[in-house]
Length: 116
Image (cartoon, rainbow, N blue to C red; front, side):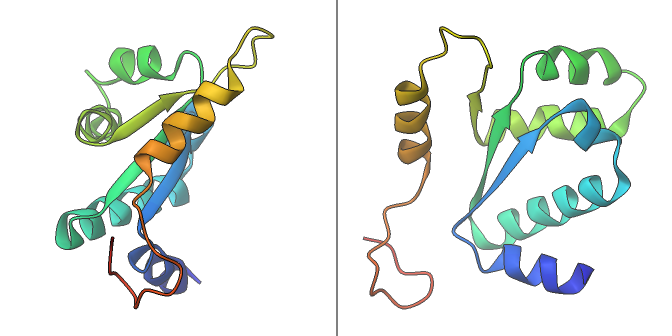
């Protein structure tokens, strides 16, 4: 199953990761995240992070003692990240526009990997 998931990620134009403290604590999630980074570097593709409230503070706080948090901080700086909130004043239209901006422009009938 792990190989299939990693292969699927390598075939994507973008990998979207919803980053929570629970995600960081899960070994499988961290493994898939590391694999995504390696594929990203090899292919030039990027990861899009959806950041829940408090996650940046969590990774910075744990970064002094946790290599995974340091890796995630570096990855957030190198890729697109979009803040999510469950606040009633959260602008979902702005979130959607930021997500669309982070996605590559690919024509539906293109061969695998071709961009506009």
